[in-house]
Length: 175
Image 1 (tube, rainbow, N blue to C red):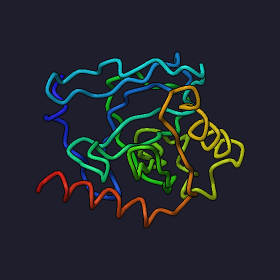
Image 2 (cartoon, rainbow, N blue to C red; image 1 turned 60 degrees about the vertical axis):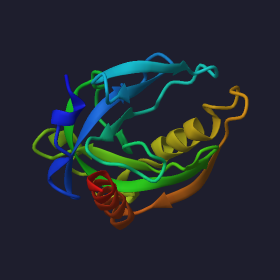
Image 3 (cartoon, rainbow, N blue to C red; image 1 turned 180 degrees about the horizontal axis):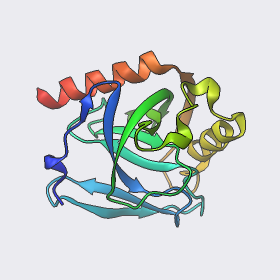
Image 4 (cartoon, rainbow, N blue to C red; image 1 turned 60 degrees about the horizontal axis):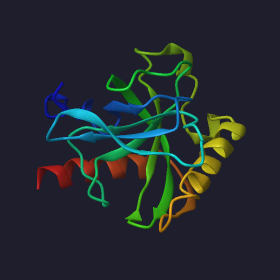
């Protein structure tokens, strides 16, 4: 598979593709897409033993402020396979900073045509508070045992900020 062949989406920023790197509730292994190889590679084992509460991936053909593609957390009723592509829409974004700088995470669900079970989720207000707490807790703690690494969660922002992150990511990639 070549990540370079996967478009960012059909109707950006409202309708975008996400390549899944880490399935929800999978073993605590951090995978990263290697754009040169076109494969997922093991970045590291998560020492805290924590599992990602939702699917973790990225929007292809984007570049965020940290030099990586735009990160996305995709809420689904079932875990998705690593390397799969899911058509998605944003609900909002978790703003964070880590040892490398700004590291925002879009919060998304599959497009309604892909998953009618999440069609009722229109914004972060519709996401159960407990799930938002799990996501926040995960990112506040998953690097806790890694020397020199840290994360500060700055808070939740809405769909407009998520759409701006996508649009800027596409523009940065095209530069």
